[in-house]
Length: 312
Image (cartoon, rainbow, N blue to C red; front, side, top):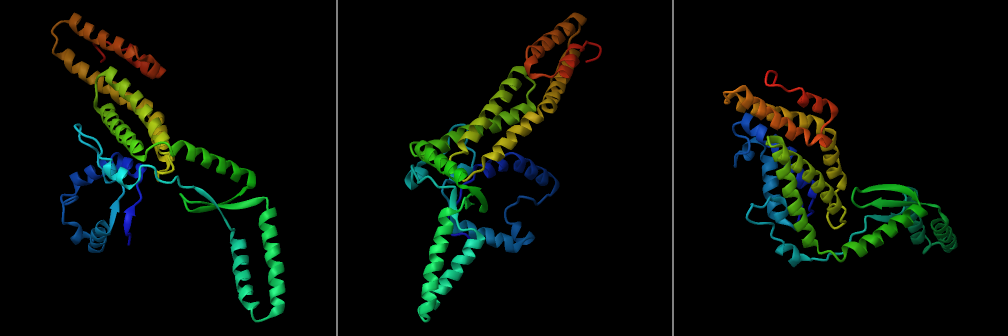
């Protein structure tokens, strides 16, 4: 059971408001009692009781980080400032003993206690200690622990020295940046990213669509940058994957947008009485879409160019 402060995670917060939000809404529409307060105790009593106790025995260091602000307000960072605006920069990679060296250390400790009773063993112990220290000093490969993932890996001393230099640079860089300002920026960027992703899926205005697409990419870049702050326990790869997915699905997203615009124009043209009026409406739309040719592929450009009042 967790006691005390919970570890903040930007990526989990982001997922809860994107894919997680969609999944919950789908379940809520299919399962009548899904998401209703008090139903958890009947569905899974053990989990419900655990969650109740967990919420009572632990607290969030940045509780406002996990709730999107209203349009009129932002996140309250006063609690963060009260805790520490300049917390110590955590070290991600630390030197540790390898599994083999750990076993040798245990054996040496055992021999140390035996040497109190057998003097000859004491001499052997001193020799073993010298050999063990010499091994640690002369080894070319060292074992490091990644405190973020909990995994051990073997790297060269040169690679470790590079990691040490990066840590020193992080200390210089982030020790001057208040943690509250980082979270305020995250608040702003995550809100704009979520708004942009929703608008991209619904808008039929070309100017709005392409502006929001560019804004979403820009905000994801900034979120990746903020996630590099070692004080925030977040893996930047998750935001990178979101960006890569957005870029890889660009054509698919644009195709849906083009079809929405086409449908809206078709409905609007149906209200016009003259052929000239319909043709003017269509040409205006084509010119507007083609002005963003840098964001469209060749197939999409040809598709839009071939629109006529008869085939739209």
